[in-house]
Amino acid sequence: MTARPRSVKKAMAASRSRTAMPTFSSVMGTGRTVPARYDGHRSTLPFLRHLGPDSAPWVTQEGPGYGPGMTADPTPRSDELFDAGMDFFGSIVARLGPDDWDNPSPNAGWTARDTLGHLGTSMQMGISLLRGEQPTWPDAERPGDLVEGDPVDWWGAIAGEATAALEGADLDLVMDTPMGPRTVADRLAFPAIDLYVHGWDIAAAAGLEVEIPEPVIAFAHSYIDPFPEEVVRGDNGAFGPEVAPPEDATPTEAFVAWTGRTPR
Image (cartoon, rainbow, N blue to C red):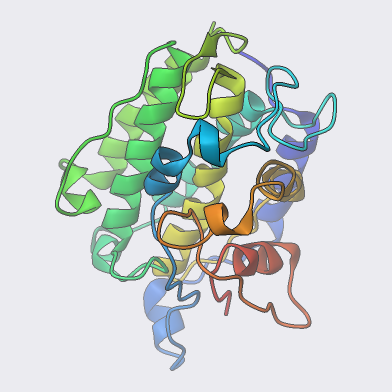
């Protein structure tokens, strides 16, 4: 397996040591509402389906692991981000109690379970890509309906499958997509980013505070910023309208505000 970049590993360790983990009940007991309301689009899947060759002239073929606008030798690469993201997301899932999964999430109209179900769909897409297969799109009335049995066990099975798929994956493999030929590494970027964004969503639903490593934030901006605003946001976009962050916002708070979430 590709080793995780040292910068991501250090940042994740530092964020764990700094971050307080209050319970959902203790946060609600203060009279605060659940943080991070997000009224934009909840899912990246319509965004991924929407992209086509005619609407994506900014897409370049700079090489494996490069998104549009990324510079040579980006750090971290999408596979490294994906690998570290599995640990990041899994550590949050493990902290939720059985009752937390029915809490409203920052994704409008979704519970924490729904967000987990959506993220599982995104990871199944990533697994298919790592295997060199075209992803399929599961159909469910609510994404939470895809979560079978205990959410922690359900996620653990997906994470194990993803870890196995990452080992020996041909990241340079070029596949046909609605955006034209793309490498596996390039297509893996959005599932990788999803792990951190929706990890934050699930943590917020349970009243937990987490910090997204700054190398992850830099990667997300370098990959997404070059896309036209009308593609990134709106009915078919991954994000809602950008929210103004607090003046004293942390890097994580500024990042989630950029994705359309209110961080406090």
